[in-house]
Every structure is written in C-alpha cells, then in structure tokens.
Length: 102
Image 1: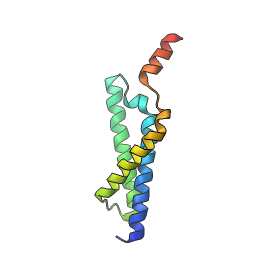
Image 2 (image 1 turned 60 degrees about the horizontal axis):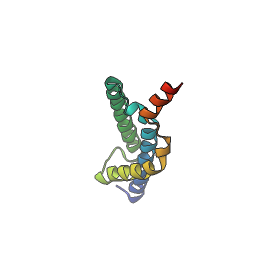
Image 3 (image 1 turned 90 degrees about the vertical axis):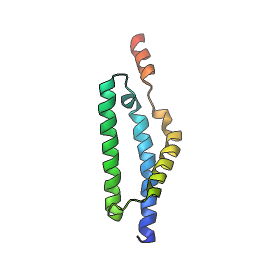
C-alpha cells in the first residue's frame, strides 16, 4: 500500500474515533437506557452502523484493506474525543429526576 494511502487511512481512522465518541456521548441515554430491550436493540444498531460506516470509508480509501493499527487509531481517537465530548452526555438518572420534579 502506498504511503499516501496509509496516511489517509490513519487520519480517517483517528477522525472516525473522534466521530464515534461524539455519537456515543450524544446517544448515551439510549445506550444505557434502563429498559433492557431498548438498550439491546440500540446497541446492536449502533455497533453495526458504525462498523459498516468505518468499512465503507476504508473501502473508498484503500479497498477496505484493514491493518490492526487502524483500529488502534480509532481507539485513540475515541479516548481523546471522549475527553472533550462528555459534556454532551445526558444521564438517564438526571432525566428521570427532572421528569419527577415537573
């Protein structure tokens, strides 16, 4: 694989990790819902859609040739992004308390 393609793949993997952390924190309430079936269904949809999106990006860049260090950069991007996007997280307990107070 040419160096330019590897660099593009690394950058896309890191940015995808940032994007994944943003989506994770935006939909935190649904991922950790107290209703078991909603939580299971949403986790399946979340996981499959993000995996398909990642492989689609890799297909556009390098014919879906995946190296383990691409996943390491996704994880690194997720960790760095999670430090900055936690403020978007809505706690299920906080929402329940606000509804009871009304």
